[in-house]
Length: 76
Image: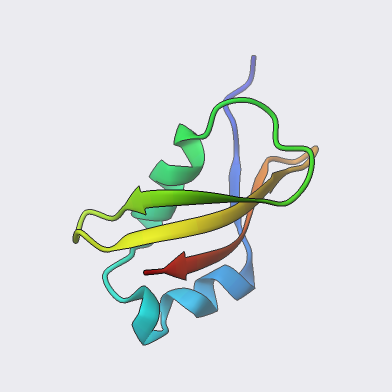
């Protein structure tokens, strides 16, 4: 089985620059996306990830033919 490719949308990258998502890095997002097991056929919100900075966040992801698409990040 080929390794999973994680694709972060431009919207998600813009969200990382907002205050509510402060302290969440791209590495945190990649780690969270890789930690989700199985196949995600529809956009689904996954809750309670913790960034290296200690900030809690949720992410919305969906699997496509090209990889796991991270649609948005929601900081707590």
